[in-house]
Length: 196
Image 1 (spheres, helix red, strand yellow):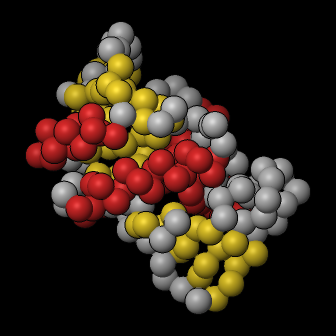
Image 2 (image 1 turned 135 degrees about the vertical axis):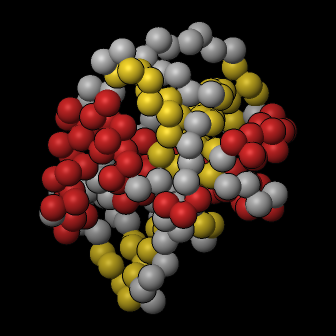
């Protein structure tokens, strides 16, 4: 079972456990883009963890799932990179995210003050990294399509929210709107916003 609803259920489960232990973390990459309405799908969970909470976070995830052995990727140089399988959902754990671009090493520690706490999934707050951060990360990774996608979204957010939907059930934007999502993932489906 690898549907979007199921992946988001696992994300909410992880978020609840992290909240109990006061882990500083944020969702990044395509999962973050999905929750914000920039894309209509995502493959896995990219959990960006504060260095000081690395051990606690790993301990929680080892109780929830199985840690996989990794082969290193030359273009990444994160201080910590771990991969877990949690109830059939893949989760990457990244500490001090690092990218090698044009023979230069770039390290990006998680900055607590830049975490966006305005979204929740299944009534569980999901901390998100910013679109600006990921636009730059994708630029450094040479993923120009993702950079353009984010920049276009930042210029025209309402257009994207009307185009992309997901079978989520309920995503809440915690500053005044509840977003009810339609049943299937199609570009034609529209998101209905209901004031809380």
